[in-house]
Image (cartoon, rainbow, N blue to C red; front, side):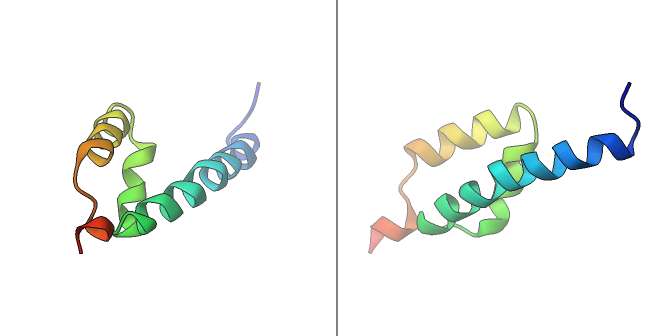
Length: 62
C-alpha cells in the first residue's frame, strides 16, 4: 500500500510530463497558459481538447 507521501512523486511526475508540454502548446496557440489546468480535470480535459482542436487559434488569426 502507498501512503500519502508515496503518492507525491508520481503526482509530480504526472504534472511535469503532462503540464509542461500542454502549457507550451496552449501558449503557442495564443491562449493563456493557465488553460492547462483543464488538462487535469477528468472529462473537462476531453471537452477542452475538442474545443482547442476545432476553434480558431488566436495565434493564427492575425
